[in-house]
Image 1 (cartoon, helix red, strand yellow):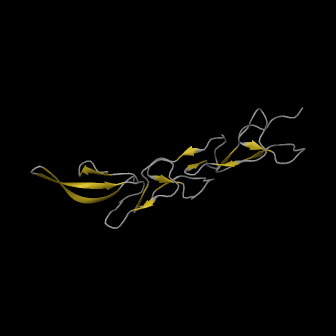
Image 2 (cartoon, helix red, strand yellow):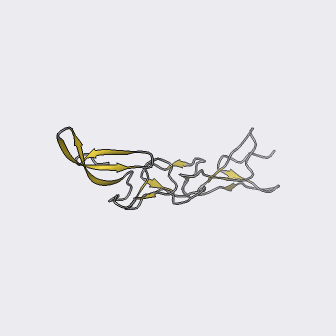
Length: 143
């Protein structure tokens, strides 16, 4: 009797003595107890390292990117300075627009300095720009 390949492994031809491992950026889908005949690529913004022996693609957190504008990523790295990733599962970090900045790696916001006027009070604040909204934060609580 032949055995079903375990999750994360497959065979793509008949009469195989062993299963092949999917590897980085890929996983298998075993349906109805049947083994996989190929690997699927991790979805855009998710990744699976080469060292992973499981069958799970991982979510990239906010401030990180997979650096692959598509599927099958094998790493998740912080956004470079000058770029930001506001949401989890970001494939490519967004560039800060002219007049804004992201000073360090892994930023979730692009920001610029501004003045908030509320009634008669003035405050110097960071004005934060993300992919979905604009908000403000006090200098003591940056974006």
